[in-house]
Length: 343
Image 1 (cartoon, rainbow, N blue to C red):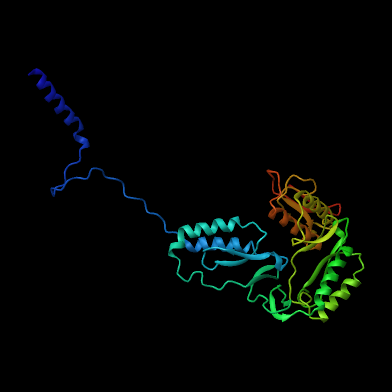
Image 2 (image 1 turned 90 degrees about the vertical axis):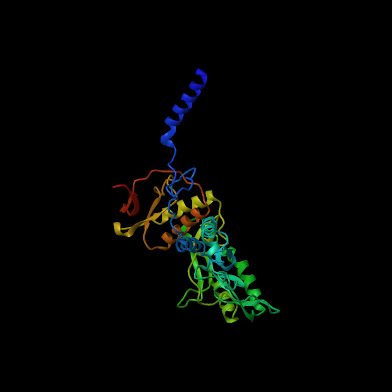
């Protein structure tokens, strides 16, 4: 009997102790829920337009080119960028990441006609930017090409292939170099826009034979000897040859490219006053003569343009660079040379 009263008392005390944790039943007689969770937080809406803009910005960085041979297509599901002309030799990982973000967040809500635009027949390079071509040669001859390198439905005269072969044989004899300042751009024809026949040559070479071939090509209406192109790559001395960089023939290893950059920078510094100098942003920080992420050079000279093109190529090739903590420098003219220093 005493044991039975002890059990009843213990149960009573336990119920009393837990009473505060038991929810009161609803007044309408329905059962109370077993658990009450906090309401979910509001999730901000996805900004599909911003994600698409990010992808378009990434595409813009991939469009630069020196010749039609560098251009092809990149395919995404982003509206307006389904098949886009780009330089296929450049790193497209940024675009792929942006396109994946758009696809995951916005792909299911895209309109059905999002990717209905026609796919280009081939790709060319116009004004330093990859473009789509509407036509691919389908006649029984070698087609002429427009200034972008796209085919046009007309036959190139038979003599054009002979002229092109002669140019290929001649150029190596005109482009040898030992220093960065020896190279220049040979352009033909000279017209309101840039001539499409452009090659890097030694400025001291006898260019009369090359000029004669260029005139033959123009007279025969051969592709590549017209006006209407733009300026893109710059002539530099690379591995003993004047070469247009960046471009299809400009494929240096990182050590060779760095040595070329140092040589170009040494020649691009002549000045008379501080306003003659500027800083070029650089991916390099621990190389003598190149400053710390900024190279001091003379403004608006071919050498400055050459150096800028080479520094861009160094970044595109993902060449190594030290990790430096650099104060922001300024450029000034000291002893007739542009130099960077920290005020």
